[in-house]
Image 1 (spheres, one colour):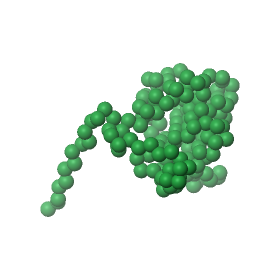
Image 2 (cartoon, rainbow, N blue to C red):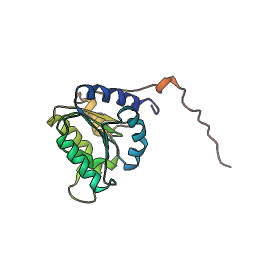
Image 3 (cartoon, rainbow, N blue to C red):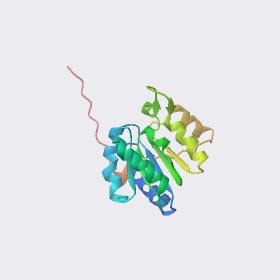
Image 4 (spheres, one colour):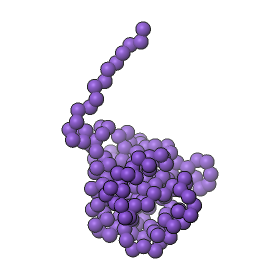
Length: 173
């Protein structure tokens, strides 16, 4: 259900992961979506939030890379697909928001990859958790939930029990 409060749930889970001194990678399919989430996440994680994607200044990307290598403090990394390749030491959770989006696939240049699939692989390698989230899950993820490879959690109500907007259909003349 749209407006089900996924971001609120993410924030609560991220708080629990950070309390365990582990880092979180929060993947979004488009760079533009990072700007929407930054202000929300900065309210909760002002001192340990990094935003990483190909639109970030190369010097800043280098700083983030080095901070992840050197720091023992847990971080929240909000980024597009390229952030899957950052050097994580203590990764506790990967969130792949809108996991069904084709934007997670790198088609243009090598290496060709799917960041969603790499997130699942990386979480297994690092013994961390992975959340694949979407109102319309990919066929692969839905099938994996049906064969009990993945757990399926459904949010069937809007956050705060708000009523959905009224839809008015008009027929053009």
